[in-house]
Length: 194
Image 1: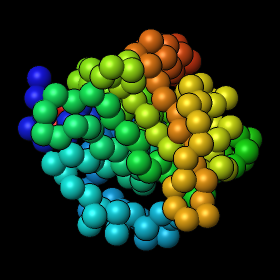
Image 2: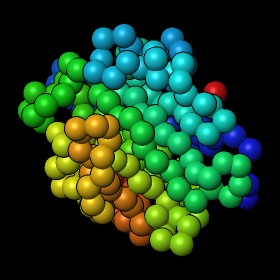
Image 3: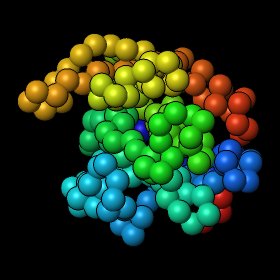
Image 4: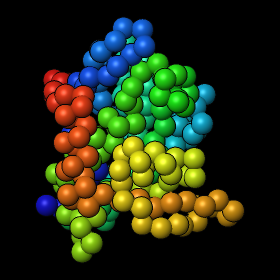
């Protein structure tokens, strides 16, 4: 399969846990410009403007008409047969971050990673190194990707002058295992009709 434009897999209803109402449904779906917040750590409005939707996409997790998380990804190579999906940005709503006990809803990041993992498993070959999904983490998220998501740490890299980054990957087997764990813990997502 060759890639004509970046891949999305539609919208999915997923189970989340809220502090206020217990288990609830949220929806993961491709984002629009109107979904881009202006008060999060990343400048999502600028990221939207810089996104090349031929090879990149932004997906959101929404609960009660509020965006709780965003993930931006790119598929390589383009044009051609996709080998690898790279997570470029992942951020949760600032009011639901930090220690698990203080989060208003969870899991946000895990569901967004589940979504892009599905894309990587369905459409990315993994190339010669069997790596259908990669990301570069900042220092503050290192433990999250290693211990919570259970991605494989590859090594250090430089993100920008004076800023270290840490490369993580999923092999095809790692990606499938992450998906199984997420679905066993939180239930199987159901497609949402557009």
